[in-house]
Image (cartoon, rainbow, N blue to C red; front, side):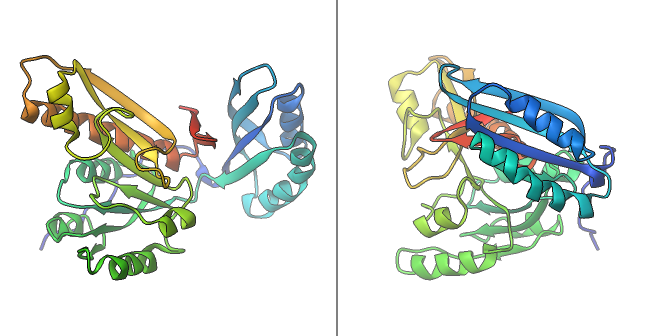
Length: 298
């Protein structure tokens, strides 16, 4: 009997002591000094920091800290409570995350397997530091593949008549059970109630290169237009179709010699890499969303 795959463990340091802090606020002098001094006072050792100023003249400031803290269970809640005074002073939006707490992911997929496979391979290798809690599909094609990895597979057919009931079943599966939904070529429109429950926590991969060729058959559109580059875009899902904050993009040059099938083949490779990269950055708390843009500390 075949045994389910298990992700390979890799040496990544003692994550039980590691936490991350993401901050966005109006730009002004003294932000880094105030946060660094606060963390030092609370016994935290900063191991990494990245910062970015959007429009230095009266713009926004973004920063990501990774720090180690002894006795995380006891000290982190104290640090979080005390930090509100610093946050109020600088009008900060902020979040802290424990590195040891792996994010739980639900992957939604239809019939194409390339993006799903990339995520499964990276998870199996230990490069995707998350827990794949389930795969949900409107088709049954991938059941054997997914279950061979020891991951639960939920087949929920979607038809025009059954769509409301299917969406209800999907929500029951994921509500309060996962941290992130990944649309790995899931060929259904996500309803507004999902977006409300998972703001900036649904990642989609768009075949082709947004904002060009939105909608159906983008590779046919690209071929008819005679493009010289094609690509893929990973973005957070909003109610605007394919219009959410962009996390990552990539492209590859093509020529007049490439037909539609060639473009699709090249595009699938780009899609799988771009989506996996975006998911990895999200699970590592590297993304800050401001309006309809992202700041990605990678």
